[in-house]
Image 1 (tube, one colour):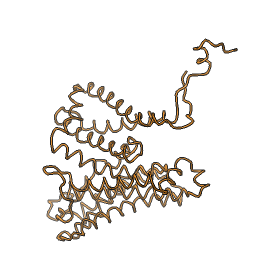
Image 2: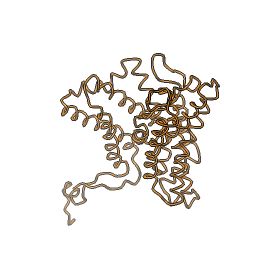
Image 3: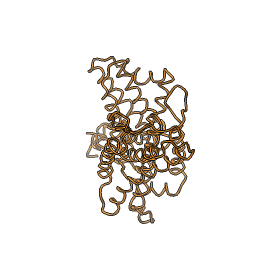
Image 4: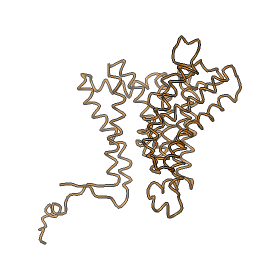
Length: 364
């Protein structure tokens, strides 16, 4: 019987093939799913992966959704490399959106050029501050950051519900749970005419460059990597585990908070109950699918954005259930984690069977 044997060193070829294999397996299972639903797999896949690129508006929507996914995933990946598991980016995104939105509402009639930059800075700090709660609980009381960050997302969501139905609700909004519309000075400029994509995409690309420099060219990035791969060796070398936790969570929270600003000051233009379609959770898949590498995450974010937009188009044109998008995301994560085992392990046949296959006696 075959069994797993640890590799002496990680397989570079496996690291490259893992995301490819995960995508192929997801597509195969997707084809089975569409068949069981009574839909033609070819037609469904065309709607998912080709239709968004056939119109200017579709391309704009892919780019629009790429921005927050890319932002959040780059921040999370830095923490994940250090084995700091921030699962609460959705809540950090909401806190960034809330704080930025409150500033936009407070200065509703302002036309200052500093309004939007102030919102970006405040929202980024709000996301980092929300993540700091988990960092403090982890380093002070050894609380599990997975549970803490996840639960804090629910707290942030309830806070948003309270604000848009109470203190920040539009008094002229016919009791709809939303704020007033933001002024032009509080909005990102359009980037592609005829689409909703805006200049917040430049923020995501700038953060990608910074993430690459931090991970590949900086000593703090190297310390974080060592802290994740060999905590004992890192501690012996003076790389404090607590510092890795703080840095990993704060960077992830800051990136998520910035993504929240991009949403409310971009396609939404106001605060409302539904700010994110789950970007904070989808970005976890993006980070892993990109191999936790800044460049790989760019392609993974584009692919995930394509699934979001293609899922909406398939729902309309083919009649695919809305849950198909979530199923695709879940399958990709499961298959990626399953395939990733072969980066550090390899299959090996028992020694007796190997010998027998070569005609060698076990007694020899």
